[in-house]
Length: 116
Image (tube, rainbow, N blue to C red):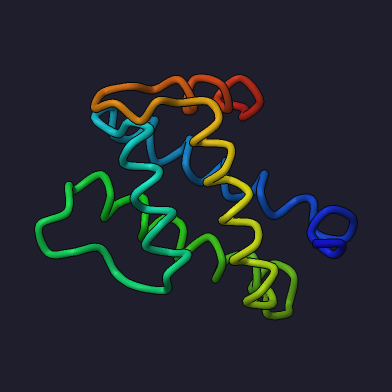
């Protein structure tokens, strides 16, 4: 998507920033939970009632991240750009992790670029 790669390159980074900060607050969060939370947001749905608390936390972080972006920029983030950004991050999760329970390869990879 042209807009994402040129005009909205910051959105995936903002999403990753939110994911890392959520994971820093809850050490039980792993790559698999990140992948699940992204999937819920991409589908536009809420986590299942029996979802891990970390998945719910991440999903909530992602939802509020979009709202905070809109508030900070004084304009709504187009839905298609948001979804494309979530998909781009989800692809990165799947590229950098086997998604085994407890694995944090992706989170460790992106944490290097997110300030403490």
